[in-house]
Amino acid sequence: MKRLICIFSACVLVFVACGSTSQVSSTPKGGRTSHIIGFYNLENLFDTVHDEGKNDYQYLPDGSNNWTEEKYAKKLYNMAHVIAAMKEDNGVWHAVLGVSEIENRHVLEDLVAEPEIAAANFQIVHYDGPDRRGVDVGLLYRPEVFNLIATESIPFTFTPSRIDWSQWTREEMDAFKTRDVLLARGTIGGEMFGIFVAHLPSRLGGKGADLRPRGAEIIYQRAMELQKEFPGIKIVVMGDMNDNPQDVSMTEFLRGKEFRSEVTDEDFFDPFLSMIKAGYASLYYQGGNNIFDIIMVNEALANAKEGTFQIQPIVKKKYYGRIFSKPFMTNQSGQYKGTPFRTYSGGAFVGGYSDHYPTYIVVAK
Picture 1: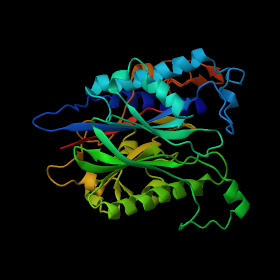
Picture 2 (picture 1 turned 180 degrees about the vertical axis):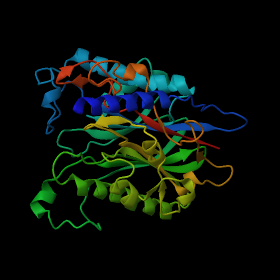
Picture 3 (picture 1 turned 90 degrees about the vertical axis):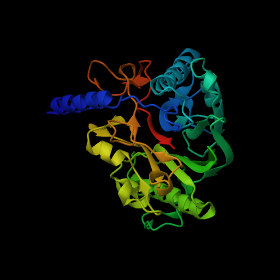
């Protein structure tokens, strides 16, 4: 029975890989200007040097992964190759690309210097966070498109919250560490944008079901503040949410809606709600197809005023998000056929890309 489930799941993901490759034109057409805004979980992009205070020992030359300079170089090349492949598909580099599972600023500096993507001139936003394993989120952006104004790193806190934390002791709360949320504010084509990049708490452990809604609540609270501070600001929330679009963290705490017509100024439009219902997936987790790599937009971007940037349908002229997958990023045979081709499998270095596919949206005016 298990084998049948795996085969079915793999077939669905093969369908997803094929169904996600509709071409997206992001070059100006008919006087319109388009830009790509995306997210990619880089799956443990670590360098080979120990960061003091971080549990990165697995990714050292003498660690359990035997993480050598050669393996690190291969990982950098692979990540750059995916970013370059998206540019080849779309005809233009991302304006903004959020990333997660990166160890520090150094790995991002090495990544943007890779020959395949150096011409993009990506600049970096990064803060060292408190995650015990040492993974952070970051932002790559093209300064000729996204004019950066301000950034902040938003820590995980337990209050103010509508979640009941009575099952947590004060000691447990004080000891809990996870990734900060990154916020970058800037302009694209003269219009104000707020970009959130998140990597919400993992599904490992018994209490994560409350932690992810709280992470979403933190983002939502700051987003509503931004809308009051900067009326008309266009907000994009992206990240590895470790939850699916239909989970409570996304629907109740971030108020994600499936259709643009449902969205008010207190909601977000989540393009991936429709896509997961249609069988699309950005990763394979515990025997199921999931979309953890979510991008949402506020009403100002979902239902924009005429002549301003608005999210666009980009897959089958129906779906407003895209999960980018190509055969080289996907296992072509074996037990995991049809799933993302990752860096390590079964504890062995296989030289793949990531266990997540990147996702993106297109905005145009």
